Image (cartoon, rainbow, N blue to C red; front, side, top):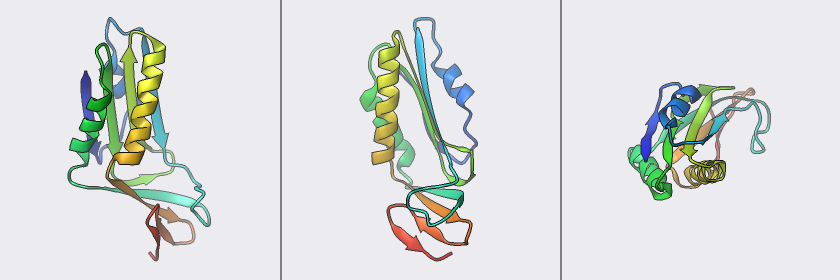
Length: 142
């Protein structure tokens, strides 16, 4: 069951995701929280902020990705944030519950990997020296 799948500029709360997937028949919950870090292999220096932009269909596509992994006995809640995020803020939260931990871990990981590969969301990486890099799209001056 897909409890929710959202693309939003609202701050993401991991506990909301965990609470959403809790159920009496679930013996395991797995959660992934992807946060903004202060470095990146593509950055020349310190990263100070990320700005995420999304295609207008991103939320629908996120729901389709989650639905493609849904199985009986699962509960899935996933959100991706857009807008300006500071270091330490959550960019993605995914929670999956199931009767057994192996399923929860496996589906949570697969969902995060698919979101990273398929969701039409792009990030602009702002660096301490004033430069900006669209990750995967090349460098742009600020």
